[in-house]
Length: 473
Figure 1 (tube, rainbow, N blue to C red):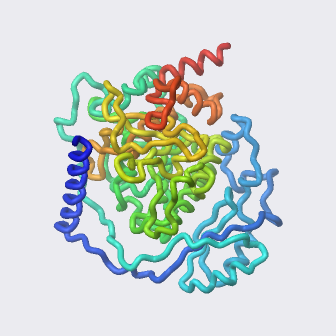
Figure 2: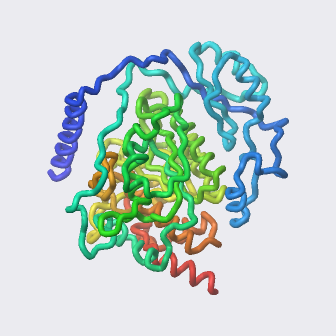
Figure 3: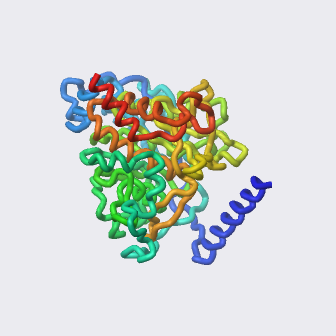
């Protein structure tokens, strides 16, 4: 009965949102650039490339190289950019190159005439071509919204330094890391998301150390900060700093804002955009990535996944995600919000190995799992989610500049991600894989992990103490 009531409430909320869109006068408009197609072109090798391991600064920043050296990780063939002469051969077929992945040796091509792909398939350097995007008939354009220039007086909580964000930080013992002086200073976090509405205008968010931003969606949106505020909320959970009102989990870290989620359609090409964003984060030297994104069902059924494919190796995006630890980066990815639906399971790239997949709990006292939090395990039997944190609800700063509550593993993930950066600041000698394992081991469900809580709620202070103790030995 309780489950039925929750479904009714959620349905009502959905109808309310739709009605609000209609009242705002938001209308679907014809997609002006159609018909169009995007194909993923997989190449056979990187033969003849002008890039080499002897001069990695041509394709990786010095910070990225130092991150590898510090962790004893070698630069390998996956780090080399796609061979330029192969790109030229593909381009000669009359298509636009809109992106590439050095890790998976692919290029993305956009074309108006789908028959052009036949010529690409015949090239000796091409292994395969896959259609990953079809232009829609119509779209709903996004727009800027008004925002508040300051918080309200009632947002303040006297005698509580973390303000309304206190519970989500105390739950993971993040406050003790902060008291020890570890607030993410010197760490670099990439936020891969769908948009950062008004993050460039809201005064409280302008205090965050934003290192730069990049849009990987085609066509690029010159107004990155007019897209959805999903990324704005995620960023606030980690980077905000306003004592007694709202403090994030890593307020002293630096942030890259990367857009990979196309709000207009849901298609497989977003896995390519995500991969490009992750590779960019690697190249500029990011230490940690938060990705509150996940996929299983696309607009076209033939692109969608089956549960037997959740093995961390089938999905393009999951193969990319699994490589991050090998590059010296910790990925925190939301588990998904399908727990109450027919799918129920995690999506991709949450099924990837060597990452922290984060589920959501709804109460810090009972540690009860949120009904919507997606479950595991992976198809090959690995524990998922890895850990859980408060996400039903989590406190965030919205694109309107207001403090509000938001539901979803999208928001439990950055709670964890920010503290990962703080922990790593405290233990810079650890590798990405070691950081991931230390965090798992402090979960309150570590002795008997399951497919709902994973290893449980992590204790970041214990993670610090255990890591420090190991170093002393």
